[in-house]
Image 1: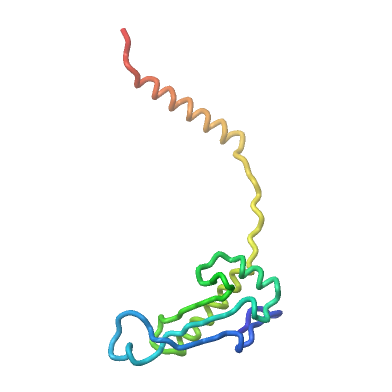
Image 2: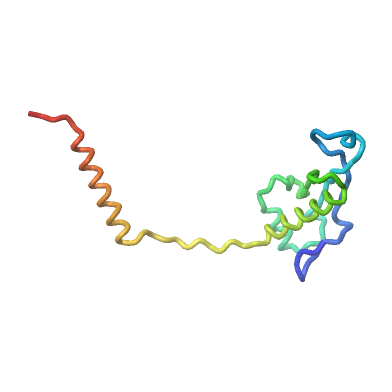
Length: 136
């Protein structure tokens, strides 16, 4: 499977197995195994250590504690479409893990924004003070 110009995953590292789909269906649902169960072991793969580390640090429910990605595709009626769907989901997951977020720059409100906020607070306080009991 192609990831980038510098890296790819050999087909023998991806374990695909056909299983029966869940849910309601017709006469076909109990007889034909159209759903695909994809398993990819991150630690045993030939990916670079950068990819492995980023994937293992990813907080995703599809990655179990042993470092195995498990994807179940059962959207389509044919096994071939589910197979391509599972492979594309694996590819998207790996590419998502590699994207680095830019560091957050701390900002503070402008002087005018702080002044407006304080003016609104004092205005609101005056309104609330006028709601009190009237004394003679």
